[in-house]
Length: 143
Image (cartoon, rainbow, N blue to C red; front, side):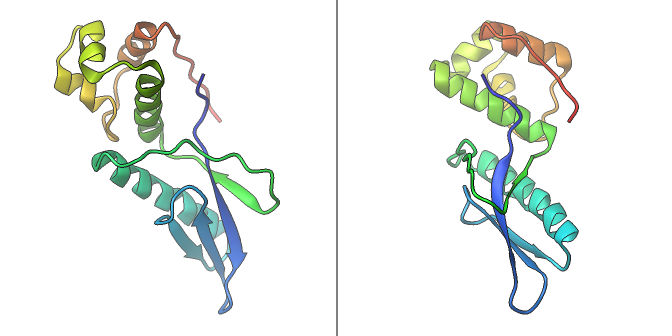
């Protein structure tokens, strides 16, 4: 079962002032901020951009690491990115191909593929159909 997707990052003081942000699961995802609040805001922005880029380029989409260290923070990507990731991981775990998903949803292969792209924004009904096709149910929460 998948829950809200949140990726860990470290925040360190920069020598010249301000804060540096580095994501644990993505070497290319780093940022900075003059204040701690700005560093956290920028972390969420860079996470969205990193995940969008990896989704668009069909790159490796790792599941978030879970760390027990101090000074670890977590950023949560936008909802459309979370949807794409969760559908992608669910297909991987179950061995369902995009063609299988398209057949199960009675739709085209390109329509099924769009479910795993950011910015797609499927309807609640479509997401419920996807969940049902995997024997799951859709749960939505506000955090």
